[in-house]
Length: 129
Image (cartoon, rainbow, N blue to C red; front, side, top):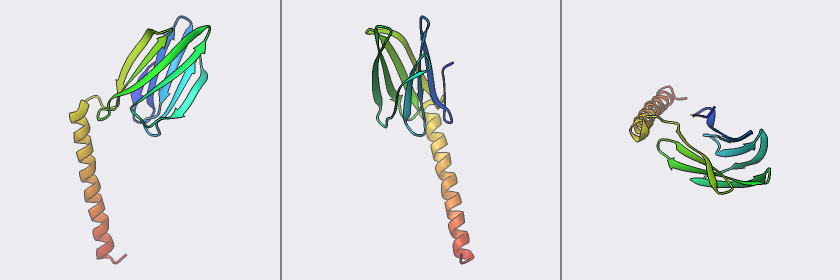
């Protein structure tokens, strides 16, 4: 089952006949892992907005393309090709509310951080810690 979440990252599964191509990506570290029938094909840390993996299995050439389509919403598209033909395309996002929801979460987090930081600083100054 394909999914996306801040803790478990992105998970994409594509079926090609009896074969399963899986792409896992960490939302924290940028590590991307490609599996073919549970065999690890590639595991790399990526920090850009796109990456491409090419491999051959069962006399076929496969290509997995990963593209960040919206950095603010955490939307990532995974495209799988077999012999230059699309066998699957899926896009997932960490924030379902889009850019507006992301900005609300970001600003709320910044305000909480400012208040907490000011409070700790005041306590250190007041109690001479």
